[in-house]
Length: 144
Image 1 (cartoon, rainbow, N blue to C red):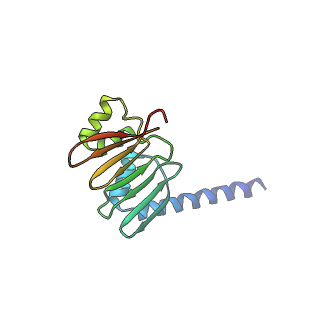
Image 2 (cartoon, one colour; image 1 turned 135 degrees about the vertical axis):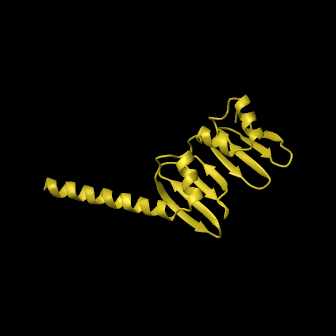
Image 3 (cartoon, one colour; image 1 turned 30 degrees about the vertical axis):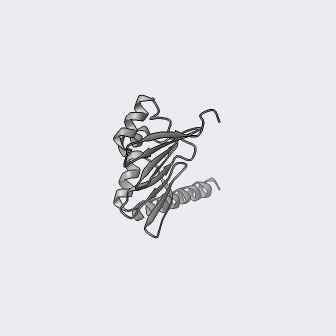
């Protein structure tokens, strides 16, 4: 009886790995590189593409969204702060400098990137960076 349970567990584990591997195989190379760089050793629980927008859910982790050129549009830590290396590498240099001066590089929970602006979700407020002007502002109240 014990042998049967062990065999079932091994087969289940193999199927789980095979399904996860299949999602990795389906990812476009720039997206898999992004995940390997900023979320190393992570598995993928969901991946799909709709109208040129790519959606990826990391197992027990972040939700990612990319455009048709594989530029990140959204990175949401789903309640966990984003990796500092992502904040320092992927954000505009002026915004990174601002975060570093205020010692906030390890307090970003989500980031949204669009052609005009970058929005960062902090714990109780948002930081908005306007790309054209380089203007940085905070919205919301830290004490809310």
